[in-house]
Image (cartoon, rainbow, N blue to C red; front, top):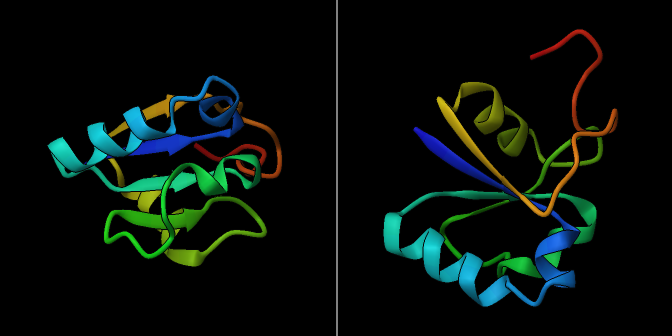
Length: 86
């Protein structure tokens, strides 16, 4: 199952509406970074909220279990990825 990982770059480039449209059109859930939190409404059914050590368990499990990760406007820092993890 695909998953979108959206960061602050989505907001910096004013692409939040495009993110929401893409996610809804294809039914792809979205996890965000701290800086990308407002890229998708947290009450949206596709929003799994924030990823990483301070994020939600289900967002972290979704990334672990996805088979394709769309990363947009995000970086893979150590607060998101566990060292030595996948």
